Length: 90
Image (cartoon, rainbow, N blue to C red; front, side):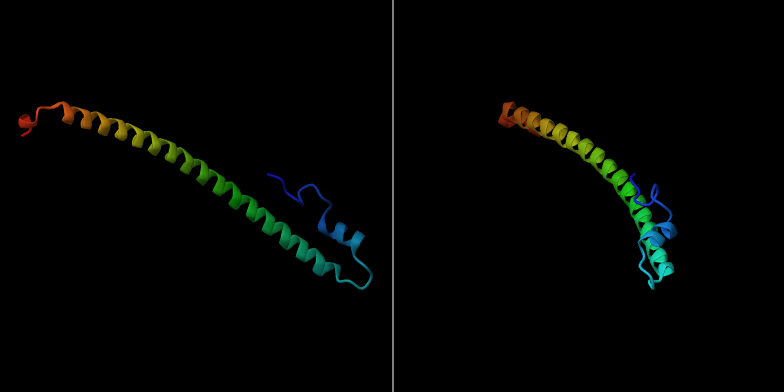
């Protein structure tokens, strides 16, 4: 998964290069680190959701196959009932 800060310069270096004089670079660094942590957590959540989605999709495909089988069976049963003599049902 792509990580915004994995290959970038360390936050302190980044802040030092962009911070204007008088700006609290430690606060900016802390904010960037917090955002990087949040992004990492979101990446984990996305991976988990993708796994859940794959599982749900495979369950859906299996259930659709079962429905198709049941529909075919129902159709066959209806045909057999129509063919059966009316007086022979018990």
